[in-house]
Length: 147
Image (cartoon, rainbow, N blue to C red; front, side):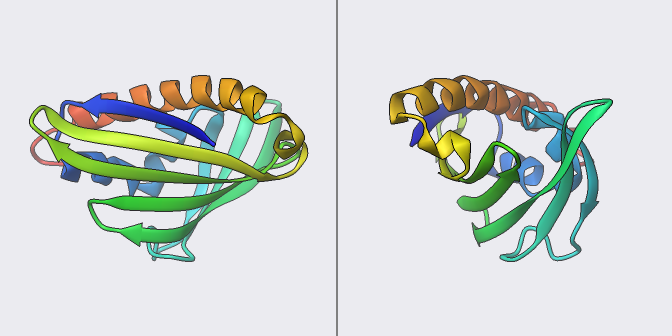
């Protein structure tokens, strides 16, 4: 399982505002190129984001769905990115003096990526998830007061 941590200079509420805005998914998730639809009950369990991965003209349509959601604390997702496979991603947030400590866990659950040795998976997922958290932090840290 890949584990990444990022200290974000924003309140947990601002971090979760980004995490739970399905329409912002394409702006901070590495590989997601566009969001096609977001269920009205997102981020409640069962809610889905329909997104595309890749770059035009080679786009793959897929989904991300909520497995568990604890407001301002935890979000666990099932991500699909075929042909690479399925995975589970979990975000855990805690308030710290400087703002929010966000930890992201990811593991491949099926498909070709899940067959790779854990060390190889961690190298790939860790680098990608570090950039994902950097992007998320930028959005959370620059939310305006009216947002």
